[in-house]
Amino acid sequence: DVIYYLLKKGKTSGSVLKESKTPQAPKEAKTTPAPEESKTAQSPKAKAASVPQPSKIQSSEFQDVVSSNIRQVIAKRLTESKANTPHQYQARTINITKLLSLRKQVNESSEVKISVNDFIIKAVALALGEVPNANVIYDLKENKVKSCNTIDVSVAVAIEGGLITPIIKNANLKRLTTITTEMRDLAQRARSNQLKLDEFQGGSFTVSNLGMFGISEFTAVINPPQCAIMAVGSSFEKLVWDEGPDGSIRSPRNEMFLTVNICSDARALDQSTVAKLADAIARYLSNPSQMIL
Picture 1 (tube, rainbow, N blue to C red):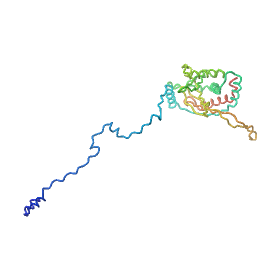
Picture 2: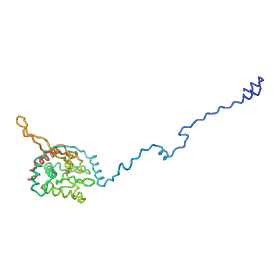
Picture 3: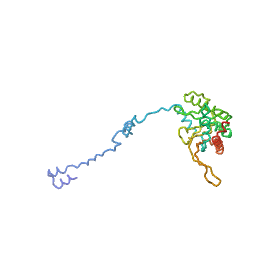
Picture 4: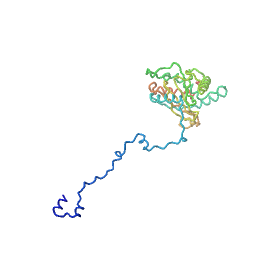
């Protein structure tokens, strides 16, 4: 159209023609494709390599410890117990001043040295005899509480890589010296892995004592099918005194105490039953002469 207009006007000079070339369509601007469109899809390995990786821990900072079979069994049973058993707790502080005094007298004249734990085992056994409703197990398959015909006290013993509970059978019928002798034999064979199955499987009540390790008090996990376990802490001194008729303080003195925590299965034992059991245990430990008559 421009050339036609110029020719019509008579303006056909070369300069005009040179300057009036046929117009060309404008060139399209080059566009940069989006990153995801300009590259082919990355492989999973390439994507993983592009993700920042956490710095690796030097092998010198830790060491893998293989869990023993007994540790795995313990962990499984305790987890099942804690998840499926309704635990309830009662704590009791007991005066053991007379017990320690009597133990000292007995051990001075006897070849068999009785431990505080032996007194505790005997006290628990006698208390279970007084409160038979606490001497029970819970049958999970039948969903029933079953009363035990004998009083068999399990005692927690630390062994290499775990814990085991040998049993003092018919503990309520045995003398303290007999309990001491049996307990030493069971503990020794437990540590050398020589116990028979019936010597650590069963029982109707467990005693776990960490007092010798300086633990003041703790709570324990029930060992099914048993329905109760008593955790025993270390002994400690406490200032006590007598009170006169006028309310005055008389004869202040230091006496020895320890704290026990009884954990029980709420499906089988109510709180009042456990309280009666704790009362009986405290009575025997506070007046230990009843256990050697």
